[in-house]
Amino acid sequence: MATPSALLVLLLAAAPQATPSASPAAPAQQQSPTPEAGASPQAPVPFQPKVDDPMLAPVPPAPEQVTTWDEALTRVRQRSTDLRGAEAGVTRAEGRWRQSLGLLLPNARATAGAGVDVLHPDVPSAPGGGVVGGGTSAPGVSVPSAPLGTLSASVTQTLIDVSAWRGLSSAKASEAASVANLQDVQRRLTQGLAQVLVATVAAERAAEINRVGLRQALERQALTQRSFELGAGTQLDVVRVSQDVAVARQTLVAGDEQLRRTRESLGLSLGEDHGVGVNPAFNLGGLVDQTRRDCTPLQDLGARPDLVAQRANVDAARESRRQASAGYLPTLGLSSTVLGFTTDPGFGRFATWNVSAVLSVPLWEGGQRGGLVREREGIEEQAAQNLEATRRNVSVEVSRARRGVEVAEALLKTASESLELADRTDRLTRRAFEVGRGSSLELVQSGAALRQAQLALVLREFELVQARLAAFLTEARCDW
Image (cartoon, rainbow, N blue to C red; front, side):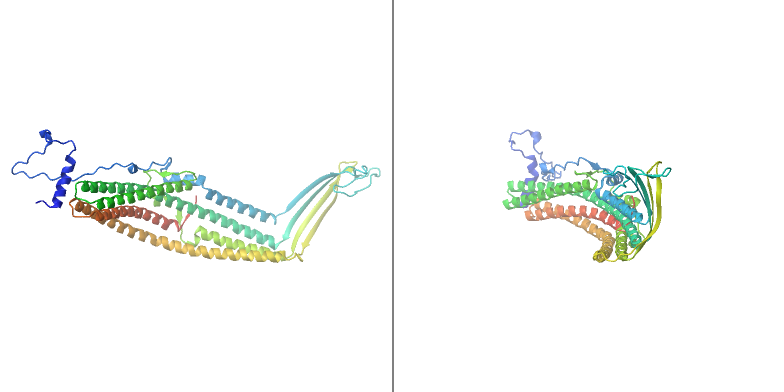
């Protein structure tokens, strides 16, 4: 008497050849010929399930795709709002430095005016009020005319102003901080663009793996359903495998949404308000070498742009505090003024030209200067603490990036071994189930483990690329 396992094998082998319309009167050529004496019997054909599901269709490609690294980097340079903001910060710092310099350079001013006394039109009246002279004159003597036109010019030059010099030093340090911040933004944009490109390609690959996993789950479902129809399986087997299909569908939906999100992130990095994909021809393997063309490795970690910017901010805050303290000191300046007015008869003449030295000594400002000094001290302390926090973060970031490559390589190796074992386990479990020696629970577990191992390998491969990028870009300076 045949065992249930042998019966299941014979039924599965015969299932693809049997049709509902088969009858005893079928043509002879459709019946299996009797093997001749001495000939080996033909091996049974395994059951080959056919699945067709709308969710197996691939994700539609993005309306716009990036083909090369240079193309992506060019678009970032042209459309990045972070880059434009950093460049505007440099422009602002340059303007502040020029304003500070203007306080130390000569300042010249010219003023012209015309005045008339409405009540006494014949009396010369200076603009702004005041009588200049009488309305009569001796023969041949020029007197102020009525109405009266005046012209004055003045020049001032600061000779000693410690506060202004401190302000200039503070503005210069702020300009250096802005330039270093721009370089740091360029580095971070390069790193962010490379990472989001890798993440998009990884999401594309994960979406493909999810569809392979769903197809395999559907095939197991068809195999289990066929076994149940032939009486070799139970309803519990069908429910278990159907549940595995539902889990595979959930994974696929989540993976597709992650793909759309990474495309949107790539679009934002490129300055677009819609998703952007990556062309299949994109050379992801040479991405590290391509970034080395645009960025230079640092010989000293202290030269990293963000640390340079923070140190410059501390210098700027220190000089700004000194500027406020120098406000207690006197200032010395030089001033020269020339005054001319219209005459009658004649066109006009210059009446006075004086040169004077001005010494200004601050006495009491109601405590404003003391409050300003305390405020600048607080700003200096904040800048110093920000520098220390940045130094610590950079140290940890570099340490993580350096060991990240080794960790990623080890994880990739273990993921590859896990995938190989999961694939062998799934194949053996499926074969055992086909011959009636395995359970549906083992079939579901092996299928889930295989899908997880496939996704893990894909993620580990792209994590290795990201780790190599991070290891280089955390200790580099990018000058566009």
